[in-house]
Image (cartoon, rainbow over all chains, first blue to last red; front, side, top):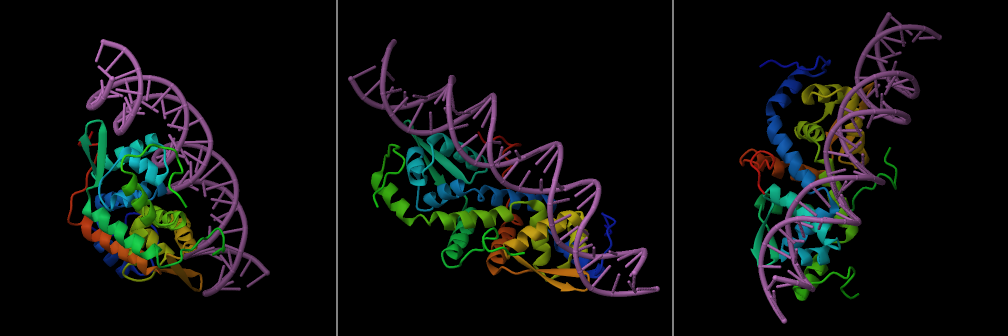
Length: 128
Length: 128
DNA sequence: TGGATATATGAACAACTCTTCAGATGGGAA
DNA sequence: TTCCCATCTGAAGAGTTGTTCATATATCCA
């Protein structure tokens, strides 16, 4: 398993080899990127944050997050497909809960920081 | 500041109010979602993972991550604009480093888990 | 049974994202 | 100066994503 792949020139060949070897498998990276992608939509994020405290039904999630119930349902479907949330049905209601402890940790970590730090807004204060 | 906003019906009005009050500000949520969005692309993720160990120049980043130098440059520009990475110039080379400790923590946490858990692939094993 | 309610789904469309290609910038060497 | 090389940039196009609207399913109540 030699290093080359792309025929680009390299400055520090040893570092390149070393870093390459430490790089997680493509599949793992793709999965991780996927998770981040699921957290990258403000409305989906709102849903998950709402679920941090415990289960809620679809209409309450819509009320809490200010989205249409259809939008909420679509979002939950996606999250459910990735086993990030799970549904408990009771009559015609569906109660969703945050199922994935890994995602919960990411949310906790992310929220802990946004509350204390000021984010950078490249559009406004032009970071060239 | 009363609770209603969307004229949707609500099942557990008290929970809805409580969760709403704990909900971070829209701006904070948007910033957090933005960060997750930056981590949601496999190639950008590769770049950041490569930078976990220390700075690298653009061409080495291209070699490590298997992307064109142009693609790398575009990606770094985005990350730079959000102050997630920073550039040190030396002659015609540009050495990038991971600047944001918050993002570093998210990466560490995320990678720690993907290496040990099996992700869900909804397309393959149909979670209806 | 029929009607109301909660949730789920499909299709369609606008908005956004990523890559690529071509060319620009700017430092270093001759 | 002139050429070369590393990096940067803009524009364009394919692909993806999120929302909406309309409709479907399924449960409850009368």
